[in-house]
Image (tube, helix red, strand yellow):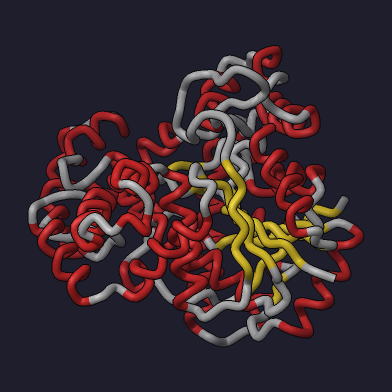
Length: 412
């Protein structure tokens, strides 16, 4: 009896996701499947196109037995922190046998070798990385350059072009972080890599066949082009997306929060902006000035970004400011939040409650029983994230707060 874990956003769930899930089950022959899923905001520093309960329903209809929420403090971070939060939660369950992820690289042994360096950070590698960062490069670029200089043409990693490709591909980067944290946490979970098919997550172009990027699907959903979407999404997932749009609850985009973000930044003094996660090196001055001179999110991002601070990083910073995420907010996972489960999933929840050292929350009102301040702060951030998210809905009656208390787990 084995358990498969998958970390996902499903923003929205499409044919590529279904392929990955089914292939993972075939490879591992796992009896139970657990999804760690982002809540109402995602890693690119944006709101999810539809709410977390709707995406949970899609995951359960795809075949998952249990969906657990990744706390928002991890959802909107760099690949490193996103992976840390998700892998830590999976590891804390003490029942998961496999972690499956999609990657552009088919050779998991090469991924493991690279991840070993990232996990242990030899002194020579750290020195090179510091030099690259001091040159004003982004972290991703600095790390790729530092690694290539560190291995000095060691062909046991493969040829140089292949390694460069691995270090620059978005899914590989996330896969390396998953592997790094499995190493650092000394986790017994076995990693499984599934070759990614179809276009990259951020590709706006269609791929021949039945696969398209999540970005393309989100853009297509704005135009309500269901004929196109039907080629790239499972029927149940497209129906869920259509229901959300027809009810005025989707698509939610970062532009829905333009006024809230600009108001927040214009109100915040410099020392508060400097405490936001990912703000460093005096960037608070640039943010403060841009907030006064910008009238839209796209203009605000344009006025802040630089060689060092990419557009995605800026979007995360803006979202962190809106949600009140400061550097002191980053703590280890404090709880397990159940978003939904199947009949088989009930058994998994019972097993987790026996094996996991963290409290398992199925009813959000139960969190009030816990007195730990870090626990309460992390939960409160999830509640606030939902309360802010629903303000983007078109109907006034749907914008009221407290949804996390009013909605129980999704059951199928």
